[in-house]
Length: 162
Image (tube, rainbow, N blue to C red; front, side, top):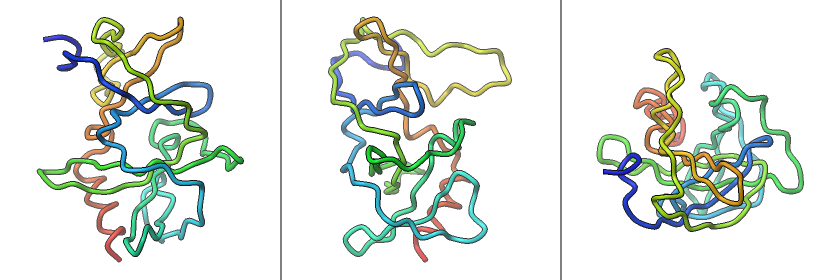
């Protein structure tokens, strides 16, 4: 088996957080929205910005930069919300994730993907499916189902069903 089970060509949506390029399997992406008004919810984790109204549904919005220990997302003309489906105990949860900008959809062959770096035992890199290589640059391929713990998703989901 190749890197984290990647055995065929997959399309990834690439986006920027700071200077780094990240990507998600397009099968996990529902839609991309322009930045919209986010309603703050009290007593939520730092990485949760609040909720948005998406065609009558309450959708929690997460700042991945904060989740990854980066400075908070600064709102610019390119800031957007990537709406994704995350698996939690065989249930799909819809989340919005802030991105500094969406780049493009790319196809990566299994041979273009290296294993995630092993950075000691104290840092959890389980949410990184691999490191894609394209045009001399690395693309960090996220496994969105593993970015958040079940406890974090339960907290976020609880606020998304206000």
